[in-house]
Length: 106
Image (spheres, one colour):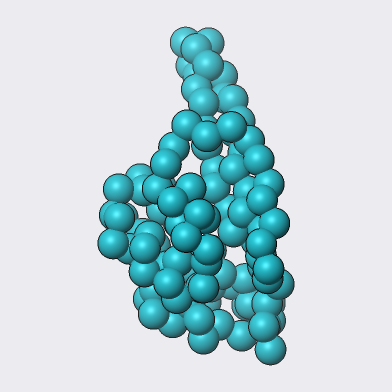
């Protein structure tokens, strides 16, 4: 499932934003695309198309288990990061975050 949220002036905009509207965001907003379970291949491909992401970035968004990295492309950077959490039974729980970081457009 993919969920898109827009924050303006530090507050969540209550209007629902679809993948198609990602390209129409204004420069004063932060857009968060949450794909907690990245199994919706078509949605991730569409996000890549709407945002103009390089095919290598879209491929990276599909694959989990990557080493931490930062790749810089014209207009944005792709970040893969990992973190550990200690579970209730003191077992390590690993998390992986993929992010596309870009300046807003006016």
